[in-house]
Image 1 (tube, rainbow, N blue to C red):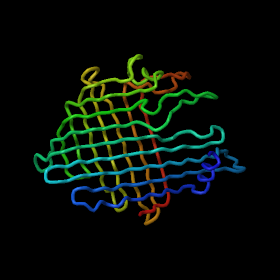
Image 2 (cartoon, helix red, strand yellow; image 1 turned 180 degrees about the horizontal axis):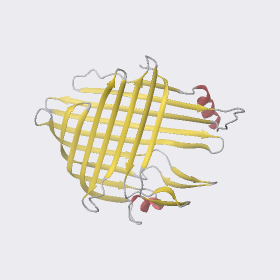
Image 3 (tube, rainbow, N blue to C red; image 1 turned 90 degrees about the vertical axis):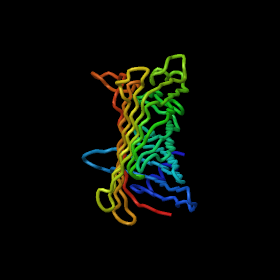
Length: 292
């Protein structure tokens, strides 16, 4: 398996293959999306400045299923992403792992205003580890954690590229199926589920900066009325899409997460510790685009 991964990485260095799903032909449903395969590779031989040979591969599925009829709308987004990176000194390690479903049911009240009911779910596909010297410690896994949020609200929607949904009565459940990780995600040591009730804000904005360059922003905020409502959970993602020509594309993105109930590994005064902190994920890919 490792040999196959190495051959694949070496043969497709710095390439991405992106496909756009065909739009649904029915009158009420619109289905579109992207399938992206990113490969990055760097190698050094007799390089005086030094360097580490590395490979990285990422697979991303991003689909939208949208319904429109009369005053009703139902927007659904499904995102699945997984990637690994390889270095000779560290072998294969995960560099991306996401699965998310976002759904928004709306009934038009005025031109740009809707009564809504939202549902968000996200988790990951595989175990995650914190690596130190020659050892590793598991810090996450499938449904460890998983988040489910839902509730009624009201939305301002100017277009598919600009919308804000506010739910003042949103329920959220945090699931952790691995017993040893419960307290790392704010759960009691004897429980696998944490229940919350609060306010949720979900915003989306995408703009064309210039021809062939677009900038996408996604923001999620949540305040738990039942415990420290002033400590707002933040999840912000920014993506920059650049189309060089018909075949070449460059994609860059960053995701910032802060949740004071999550203990993240970090180093303080030379010691490995855990505690609340800002989580940062960055990605940069350049390659060939294939549409079908």
